[in-house]
Image 1 (cartoon, rainbow over the protein chains, first blue to last red):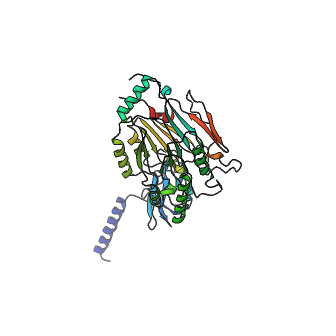
Image 2: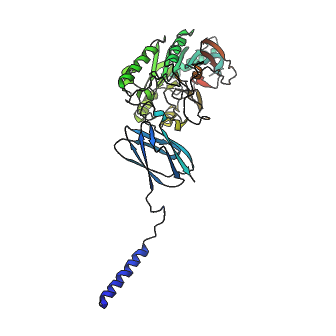
Length: 124
Length: 331
């Protein structure tokens, strides 16, 4: 290998190192995409019917309906969403306090609509 | 205007019968000149003075429901009709605050239930019946079946100096009134002086009573803000299948009991689950209570008793309840 090629290779390595140094290190949470939780609605329940989140953790709820339009509502978590069949609805949630929260369907979907609910538990 | 003692000239009574509530508007017309002046002022301010009448609120008959919380179906509703027809004074008006029927996936079945409701309600010997839908009546079809049977899902009318407003917070499927109806409400009320007595009747509570039991209306605050300038407002609603009263500033909210089954007190019950049926007392959870509002003139009286339906007379004092309709106008 001639001298020029060695010099060129070394210069390339130095440049690559410099670029690498300029890129900040990946930190957990800051760069990772939010955790995705998939929830399916079907008269008259949600699957899963219990989900556990961490306080302060941003998560994406990916909501789908297997039959008709449903609601997804939890006032303390600032969730007020409709879930239409045939499409995926994404919702970003960052719980602000630990606790056990009831999520209800608030889009009337049939005779047992009043019993359609699930629980989100937020841990510290 | 001369100070008058409202208790002397008018008496409002609410008759808690478990099948609904009877409200009496009783101006004790007499020789009191202050009363005459008051009524004249009301007439001048509102265009019409109030005059005595009674009305009843019924709610949540769920015609078509037949399950463990109440296997007797329409028995309580039919008994309610008997009781109303047996009252010594025929009410001029009966307001139904929704869930007239229990929903069905089968449109024909639902239509048959609505027809059955109309047949039973049609037996009430009152000259005027008015209805608003519950989510079981109008949540799935946007109110089509309700309109076929009763006309618009929201409307207003005047009766003896009181402006009645029926609001629909169910037919958009979600618990909300919606911007169009809010606009209609603003226009409807705009023509009235602020002293006009207003009774709003609707299905769901217009405030956050228990959101995770779906006991709320999303845009209830907008309705309240629209009503806020008016000094004499009472809101009657159903949906929660139990008594509840809320004094929200100068607006008073009253829930009627159901005619099918009762829900427990959300403050103590771990979950929303109907109270169990008691076959020895089939109407037990639908009423049978003695009510006192704490006012100085409160004196419960047993107005009448019809087998398992006891009626308890509730007399409101001057600071509580529907006597807000009779607040002195401010000029």
